[in-house]
Each structure stands twice: as structure tokens, then as C-alpha cells.
Image (cartoon, rainbow, N blue to C red; front, side, top):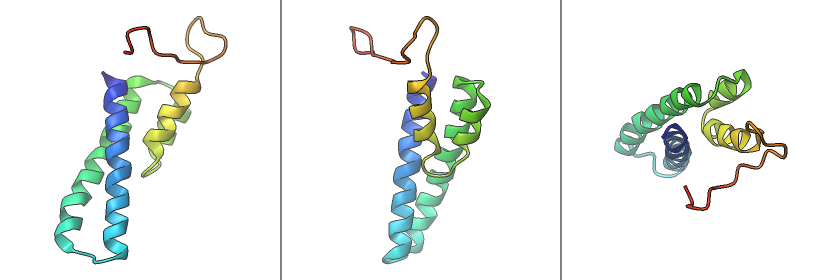
Length: 98
């Protein structure tokens, strides 16, 4: 569940940041910023919290603090990390696709 939460929060954080910056660069509507600002902040905090739940690795936790792309970088780092009993570090999905 935590990886799913991390993935969702990372995508929401990136999407809200892109929309905030697009709003700032174009029309700069205050209601859009008022709505997306807290969404981005909440997603940012969820990324950090989910990363703390998923891994104890200090580098991953510090990477999660990078605004916008930190969560996606953590997911990439977790995919490449060799798991127990794995030599190549490939994290393949099971036959059921879960």
C-alpha cells in the first residue's frame, strides 16, 4: 500500500507543480494558485511520509525532500535497489500483475 501511496503522491506533486508554474507563467489566476498550492504541499508531505514508511535508506529519504521530482526519483531508486535474494536488482511484477 505504501508504494502505491508514494507513486500516487509523487505524480500528484509533479502535476500540481507543473500546473502551478503554468498558471504563474500565463494568466496567474489567484484562485488556481489558492487551490493548487495546498494540493502540492499535501502531496509533497505525503511523498516524504510514504518514503519514510517504505525505506530506511537515508539517501532515499533525502531524495524525497526534493520538490516536484523527489518522489519519482525515490521510486526509481527503489526499483533499481536489489531486494533480498536478487542479484540483478530487477523488480519485476508477479504473474498476477500486482
